[in-house]
Length: 128
Image: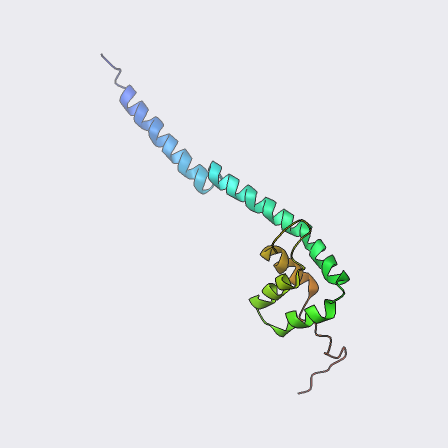
């Protein structure tokens, strides 16, 4: 079989061009694989669900008859343990779920603004 002389350089050029376009597309063009796209979609959906359920947690915290006691127990701990205390209080367990959700607890904790202490005076001034 006799192939034309231009065929070999043409194939090399096409392969090199395809590799170059692929590298540029994935590096600068914003191309992603199907797996990355699926992972991003799942993360976005999870984030949207958490943001939609955070008001449920805040409402449960508002209407809880033991609110003062539970808020005191949440305030008594620090850092990540506050999230665990909020989960133990039951406010991060949405209706229909068996277990509390850590992400909902985190957002709910931010909405409750636990740093505001009821014993701190409103017009405290700092001296010197």
